Length: 478
Image 1 (cartoon, one colour):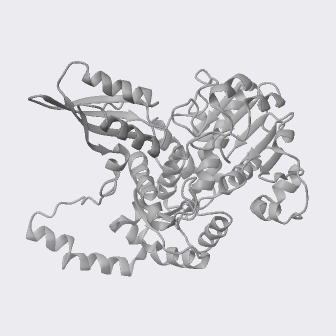
Image 2: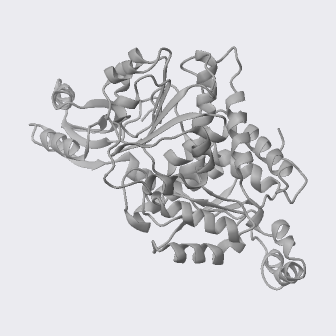
Image 3: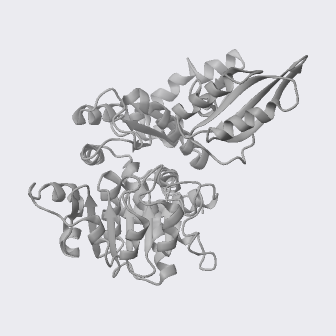
């Protein structure tokens, strides 16, 4: 099946035995189309005697829809459904990652150097000079991708086993984009202290810790505790990776509409891990007028001075307010806003609601798979529109941030990932688009832009050095 076919989250391939007569395949296509699905590819498998075997790939709206279609095909005269497969599941068979040796074991002599007795000399050298572990083991290029499965994607608390395919995918992105060896660590506990203690115990193996899919507010406390006790970079990507990319895209969007981040009114909807991190980082970037909303309404308000002073504990600030207090609605606070940033759930706004905003408005509707407002119509009501989806312009994807951030931090053996390093990453991302290239449909680089990781890594490494966190002088190559 061609890679040029548009992506669908529900795509099935049915192997059909079809009577070899004119018009039979047309019956198949007609049945699929009539059922509301779309044929994405057809492959000829075998022709023998009076039958033809074809693999027909088609897109459906959900699993139930796919089952209904295959059942309908099997009832057609002269057609038999031999098997049905899901390409997404096929890609996951046996897992998506594997260990590969850097040095082949081809002779007894080589085995004795790579393992016992030769390896004993290396162990003694590290025992004598612990910092040698960075040069003589995988530690300098390795990241632990740690989760408890409590907030898997937007699917909820699915547990460690169900989180594993996502963590494998994260490890693939680290390797593909930054050349880092990442290891999925899915913990069978959701106790904060147990998670912290477990990570502390496995930390000697890794150069960095990427926390992933851990629910708020536990994710804040776990990250803070690990940062305090470890001398290697720790980052909860759901928070900070998202914030880095959002702020980069916002800076470029504001250039197009000729507005200043210090004067625009920003509304953020969804105050989980990512939403709070975005508010924090926008405050650090100079934003002065931010309103944060959740299901209760506008729960995060106040002067810039108050928000900036409380930015380390915005979650606590929100939940310290009286339970019986009534808050302004999202639609009301959108009136006169310049920027809407959605990190919540799909279709909570109607396109017409965006008319409440000021002229030349910016809308980042990042709920997945369905944005907060229907993209098909929302374009009419805003100057710049971005989502988290790959099938629309301006994809806000945290994969633009975390590979380069960890690459830069590990290149200089930084002890931490601090605010200055994240802001440097965001600035580097924004600057990759030149003023001549910048337009309403191109405010952030694409995920496959090979400049991204190098630019982000270099900026992060330099910021770590300026902050006094780098323990290795060599900076990432630009």
